[in-house]
Picture 1 (tube, rainbow, N blue to C red):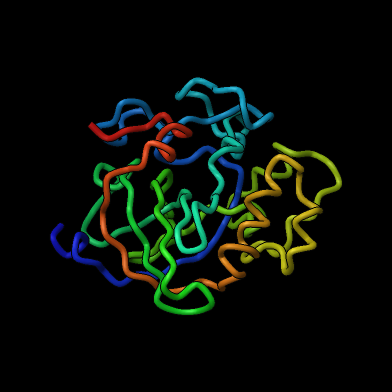
Picture 2 (cartoon, rainbow, N blue to C red):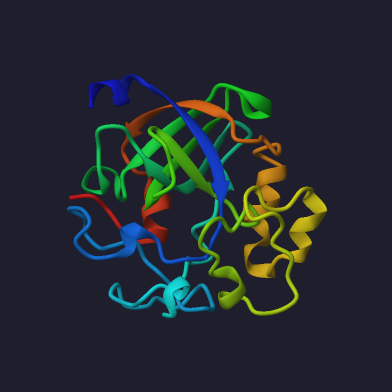
Length: 210
């Protein structure tokens, strides 16, 4: 664990698949509550045992689990993760400070709470939640938000800032964040370390590690 605290080299990608997150299921880790999930309105909380909207159920990502900027060099958000030598018992609802080391965001810091596990992720890989970032292998978005929306490429999502207006209005702000604070960085590298979770992050997920 010491290597994580001093900063471990990692990689990032981006996604927003609208699905119930893995850490939203009971029994994944020693936490106060599993990650909050929402009905199709993205606001109303649903039971932690509710099936994912990606599997025919009614549990989806909540709208407030999208990233936001604190200032020009610090932002908060959520991510799926796979950390070498660890498991969901360790990383579910834990928070990590990501210091970007490449691309347009070099020198910036994103503090994320891990809400999900990426089954298709490599070691020390954080898949950052941002609307319009790509629906990935599980696309719950067309079920949560039926209508004439444009989600962009399956991997990578929308191409430019103006495309954010083609997403549902309630999640456009997190798409604009990608092009504003995140400066449309494309899978930047970073170093990460475990940090105490800011209350601003846990307030949205209702998940705090014991």
